[in-house]
Length: 409
Ligand code: PMP
Image 1 (tube, rainbow, N blue to C red):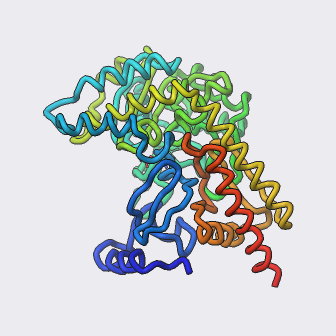
Image 2: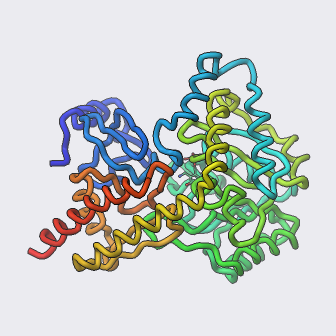
Image 3: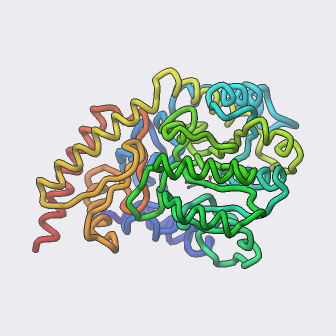
């Protein structure tokens, strides 16, 4: 019985004082039915819900956790800055140290600026691109997520046509549609925004083709526009130098958040020399954008990611997980499609347009102590050791077996 008393009581209380019970991607509709909404803690590769149940966590807080929950070196850095004071009259020295680290690590980066959320970072990129070019049009892939703000929100509720007036859509990995969108923007093109790879909700993931990446770069160069990489979700998981290093194309501006500080609230924008002057002129800020502890956390996180060569290890962990799931699915008579980079797998059942089979599988896995998602890509962390993955696979094997019984009677 997935319904839990403490969780149910909190959901009921939330329904009275929170519109719709919960908002955004945490709305009940986004997670499999019966999943816990409220959590009490996490440790390594595990999270604990408010009813004290532990799960092996393959969502990693929807991306931020890359070293594992409560990583000792990160937590120590946070604790130290919190003890000294976090929110002060200005930033701490961690800001400069972190900017230096990013400039050192990311080949296109000549400078860095910091924000709180991925949406802040992406909006800052667009603002800088418009300031630098004096142009208005921004190309963004249809169905791509860049944040819950009017210029790019996936929902049009409460958004005006004017908010979207200068956004032109193209199809990811489709050079022809990108070229057509650039032609539509004409001599008013400020930026082409690209996701690290195609990771739209509930859809087979696609890595960028070299041809698509090169075309985006060439169109920007021709128009004097900014190539803006949204590395918010994939950043530091695929390549510490930026996710498009893998296709040999460097952006002019890039946005990061999620994994940058292993769960502490922080986002970043990096940019090339040509965009430094515009970046210095735009007015972008927030009361909490300068806090010391999240930046200390980011320095500790990046140090650890370099030390252990994180992308290689995350890929190996993802491959082990995917190989196990694929073998189990076929043994139990299911047709599974696992797409995208192994470190960020989307696990879908074939012929499951409504994702009901996927949802039922997640429910069976949850009942056996494994937290999955049926519509959003999942995330591996460095806490997903071989032993942890094998333990999770034991549970998913039983989950597939239970699903086979359920779907066949
Ligand atoms: N871009 C991408 C690719 C994302 O995955 C997200 C968050 N899911 C965002 C931007 C927005 O980040 P945030 O939720 O921190 O505003």
